[in-house]
Amino acid sequence: MTLDRAAAGTVFEVVAGLLGELAGDPRVLGFAITPETTFHEDLGLESIDLVTFAGILAEHFGPGVNLAEYLAEQELDEVIGLTVGELARFVAQRSGPCPR
Image (cartoon, rainbow, N blue to C red):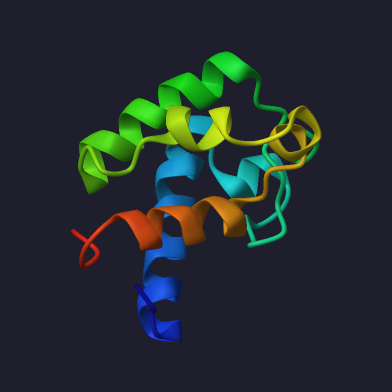
């Protein structure tokens, strides 16, 4: 499935918003969440936070967005270096039109 930039951008905005709710307000964090923001280094999220976020994504976008399955296919270094943009691309590919 190919996505136009507008659809991919919308998914990124939703993912970043949901992540902001989990990690804390970006203004409090001291930076904006961008596609290059990493879960581990920038946001300081641990594996348990990714498990929580997996549930949030599935609830919001549907069961086709299975973060645990996606992460299981990655090497450890890829999981540690996972960016919000990479995750948003995964979500966009696995979900239909962006809900809410």
